[in-house]
Amino acid sequence: MENRIPPRTEAVEKLENYITSNHLPPNTKIPSERDLCEMWGINRTTLRFAVDMLVESGQLYRKKGSGTYIAESKLVRNLLGVNSLSTEVRQLGLPFSTHILSLRVIECTKQVSKKLHIPLGQNVYECIRVRSIEGVPCIMETMYLDQNQCPDLEKYYHDKSSIYSIFENIYKKTLVAGEEKISVTYVSEEEAALLDLEEGEPVFFATGVTTMTDGVPLEYYKQLFRADRFKFVSMIKRRMT
Image: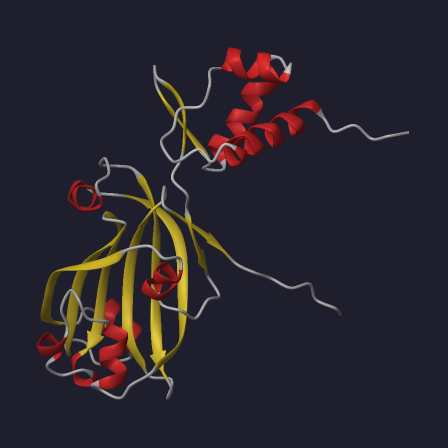
């Protein structure tokens, strides 16, 4: 006996295929429920399930009183990846830019001291920057760097330079490993303004430490990622024992 695909599953596949085959760009409004139901010969309950599934997965979004639209494609961030964010984005052929909001020397707090394994109150660089993809601000980042490891950083680092290239070429330090934690938070009024979001919108919150070849920490960072532009994945392999 032939196994028939459940109507709801089939509706999801039809909707995904419709978006793909018609090459619908982001922010395009999809046809009305009535039109789609007539097109595929399904009832509205089944169609609404399919739309809900694609909204939940981030492929569609709704505008109250207007309809349902194609969402922006999300950049996939591999939690086990070794490439920098700028490298990954440019490999996709997308314009990427950085705007440094501030770069200053401060005395490290207890938290920064613990993360960088340096004495409390020792000088560190605090760098706050916003990173944009295709002209859209997508990431807000605060970095803390041990000043002893990268003296006179302000002479070399600017919007057009790569911080990791400076580490390697100026200071002869290579960052090879790191530990990162991902959670969800909500943007403040100031953060929302910088990321072109509404206050209180959810974003991904990443914190991490990057170490050099000798195992010494050089960088502690905190990042806010727009949830409508990113998704995080972790590739795993089945254990054979």
